[in-house]
Length: 528
Ligand code: NA7
Image 1 (cartoon, rainbow, N blue to C red):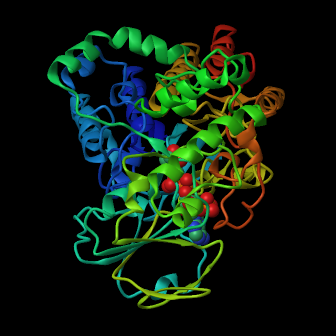
Image 2: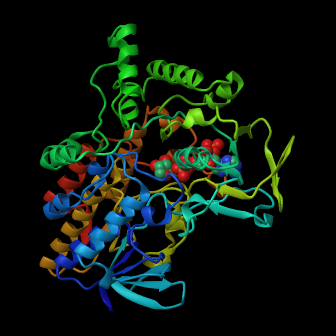
Image 3: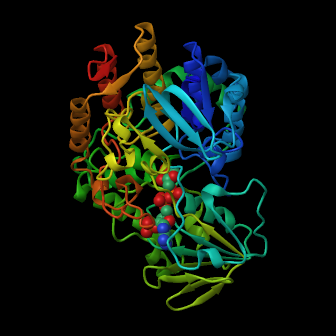
């Protein structure tokens, strides 16, 4: 066997896993498809890409030295800054010498107690352990629209943005898609484009980000407060600085409710989504109050009432899909160089060599931007031919939805550990990543101390966990709406039906479950 462990992906989870497994004295290699580290922050270079989590709550917490030496410049840092940060981490911990770039893994088969990993170039490698650090949002999907290949101008998917700058000055630009990515892209491109046309299928409920630079004295306070801040992130529902308000929506007067909503709308970050009344995401009547509030804001901010109406979602309540955070997004539609096309009313019929045709108009463009999202959660797994015991394909195992043990293991796929796998706690993702990575390192360390070489989650453990995931997902309004949260992607064959794709319990509850397993000596995992 060539390696003790192969890690797939050099994003936030792969980098930290490499660091910890090395610390166990293991021989580890990371395969990374890109030319550099950073995962999400390497690929998503589209204009305007930035955090919606507070920068300091997003960085790694495992190294005091790293915390002290890294200065975040904004409360919600931009993609170039985050990529610089992750490169700094790779250098600081000397990670690059065990990362092989330009190496896309296409297959991983478990055979005779080892994982055989094949790369796109045909080379093969073997390891005892396989750690997938491939991300829940890393397999971009292009829209299924006729003629996409025919367009003669420049076109880009936001997650495959070129490394060189793209100029929009004086250009006719189209953006398709209005999720978190589309919103960030649109508000940036609108600043310089000659004419920007936004093709919107489903409007989302967006709320202000309220980003600002971090002044030096503020940074000093943030750094001094790191222990308390990370302690808070361990206690909150989804590892953000924000967590649900203990009050119910109707336990306060209408005036108090309105004042609270105003306060949240004027506050930075995800407070309005993650720090709202406790029942806002579970009780349809409670949800209707914040939905009405945000609708009023959109109508105030957009001057043309007909355009405002197109931007107000009608088919889902606030917060039941991922809330895009924005900076003057709605005001973009007051600009003379911006047009909004509702493609539910007038669908795109095809992309032509010169632009886009809808059912009632023809548009000419120099640039088309596809902000059409990802084959989320299981998509990055589906793109690798992963086979466990008896040659069983992971894709077949998951054809009716993922079944995992704590989002980390799959019965019959021994020694495969997933970081940010399906049915794990997501939220403010690096916080969840650190926990996941440390849990996996803990299990591998346990095995090595005892001379054990194979670990496989039992079917019973998977059944228990999957039942728990289903139970905590019940009653959540977001599980009754189509979005990547529910595994729906109209551009992918077979992904048009809702599934329970995410773990919707609290992060503390998730960690408590995983801690119990470790403290109990991993009885749910068969080891030999
Ligand atoms: P999302 O949130 O999945 O958004 C994708 C957008 O693209 C959304 O508005 C879609 O409309 C639209 N879309 C997708 N396919 C088509 C076609 N065929 N025609 C027209 N419009 C289409 O992806 P993002 O990249 O914005 O964000 C993903 C996550 O990454 C985000 O939540 C963050 O956590 C980070 P639809 O809503 O399906 O009608």
